[in-house]
Length: 177
Length: 177
Length: 177
Image (cartoon, rainbow over all chains, first blue to last red; front, side, top):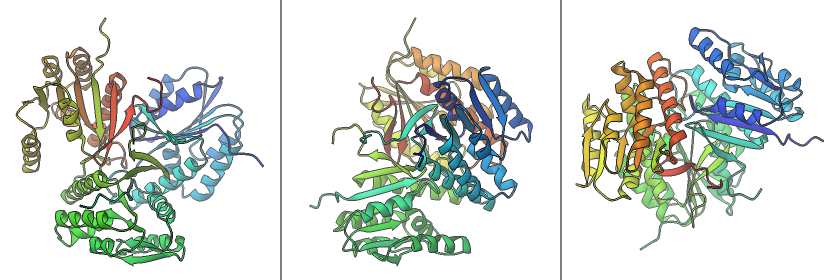
């Protein structure tokens, strides 16, 4: 039996909290090349700009693949360090395509467990505001929370970003290792 | 003069952050039976489903009481470990019934102080999004923030849940006990 | 070359998380008089009430100045401990007056670096809810996140308030000083 990967990290935080940059630095601590699995689908100019900005920031040692849906397969095929950016847009894509979120989540976790190198996953924390009026937003919020919990339970490291700085959630600071 | 109870815990966090499950585990660390004070009023199917799910998860050693409004009285009448799930729905019920929130909060804190056994209270953190357009939502958000502050000032332990994992807020990690 | 000020603190948190009171206590740990730079513009009764409440709480050793826009100049002119309350309303004022946010942010950071005494800045964390429908709200959320990141990178101390209690974000708990 395989142990859970000792190199799985979950980077959570709000909008503009520095999640992606922090996650890139974590991956870049390992030998290149690094695989960037981008889940964003550039529906509009606002998104296209952001994707272009993120890409221009990354060095030539990054290989970028667009994986709006088939994330588990892409992680499973990785041979070195992987960055998943981000879970939130992946979930959005799954919901919009009416995919089976439970099955997709289970497959992603399985792929992370089997990955030969470190996997860093980025997710937006979206559950700390007033309950949304919109039923789809509530459904999305629930799905994101459940996915983050399942990944956090398997991850070796979980951080919560505040203003570009990581707060360590796991392993619990002060707890015996 | 009674000292503040040494066994009062406040479990805060966003939607789907694992608050209830963590709070149940904290209570179950004490000898059964455990009293579950449920403040949810099942207005719709979404809520009925959630209530049924939570209830089915709990063992037979839990005694469940529905207390949409009279929470202070129910805590005061407890003879062993108590879980209050959750403050957020209780506040909602108070606001909808035009009750005096200040008086109800003071009575709850007094009851927690006098409880003979440990009391664990669950609350949703709702103040970390954009300011809501809706005046009622802003009023609710203010009331929740004030109640959490008052309870946190009295509590021995306060945790902030992220993806199912507790971050210790109080006592402050690294501070002398 | 001047070193970054060793006495710059950023107090972040949600609505009604106790940010202002905590920030006042931090400033009051230094010798009076203390300068309170208030960025709120009292557009309506709700805001006027809150401003009056905050002001009535502060002792006579506080000198209050209203600076809806010219915050960098006001910080630069300070001769002792300063509290900026808050960045969020300042950013709102900048956006509404179509000011250059990048230039204003750079000027503020420069002023904080040069301040002769401690500077404590308060900001609302607004990026942890569902993505707002409203483009202006998204723009505001992005600007707030970027400003907080820039200030946090320079600050000696960053705290994230939960229910009136500070969680230490920087310096990282457990890390070597």
